[in-house]
Image 1 (cartoon, helix red, strand yellow):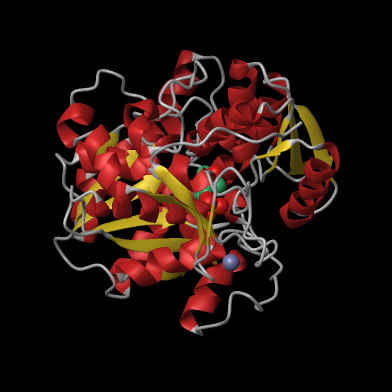
Image 2 (tube, helix red, strand yellow):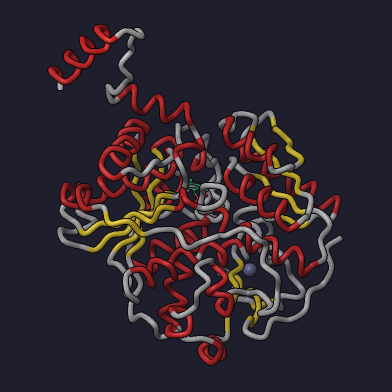
Length: 428
Ligand SMILES: *Cc1c(COP(=O)(O)O)cnc(C)c1O
Ligand SMILES: [Zn+2]
């Protein structure tokens, strides 16, 4: 059962983006009581107090390369025990060839190197600590696959049972991860949107701790650590632009929170422009942004894209996602499925990074943003590659096949091989 938690000194409370009310963190767990199911709560900090707890020098000198090097900037008790999986500390890779092609200074933050191979591990690690604070017996989440896999693994490491709701259409590798990590898996014969609502019902009915994206306000806090790392890896500097793909909008909201924290602490004087890339078949935020639509009343769409991790009928963290773009002077762009598949191949061939479709969507988004003049020549750009290509092998095979790449089929004879090789290298 979920019970009250002890106060964390640096946390002022949970403040609502819409009504501005500040709720004590011990009294509200998930959403603003006045704004129903909409995710509008943000963890508010006493930044002056934070600045007395830590400093850039202290952080940069910390030998722990996981997200817990930032524990003073997170809503956790300093003595809390983190689950024994290494979350965070992913590489920021210079992407020289791709950068030259796009005429920008480009880096790729490779989140495919997390323990369960997506950025979602950052948020799930946070969920575990919050669930432990509450003394929860069971932890649950609805997911298109990655958030569930992350929660299942971190729950296993922390010895808390998990119940994960995913659409039955989720790619098999993601379902295999869930089952391998010992989660109870509800394969929902419906959309992610429907799985999300079922999970909400079950967590309320049974008193489980709920990690749902765009519902649990602490997920933003885990995800924001990616921005701290980018800042550290660029030598305590922020880039001009960060491009990230958007489904529910929680990652881009977290990225925004991370850079805003650094600015409020006085550790950077500006935040990067944030560009959210959506699939053309799942472009709720692009539409809302372009047409200045009201996020309270805009109805769900029927999402359909090869990039399953960003297929969202109703982005659950739409308020934070919109603020991330408007507050930073950024933009939303949309990319077609074929642009996404082609970016998967380019990232693999030009830099050896294997990205799942939703991750490659950010690279495709940068291409569009350059084309539309949203990113200028010579700017410093970070593309976040949010998940590993092994997450969706069918899509990867489709991507290489459509780009004309395929294996050489050879009979097990030397002459046959020599003929195939001669033909192949003559052709290329
Ligand atoms: C979850 C996810 C996204 C999108 O994040 P949102 O918070 O839903 O916008 C993008 N890429 C990958 C690989 C993901 O797992
Ligand atoms: Zn409110």
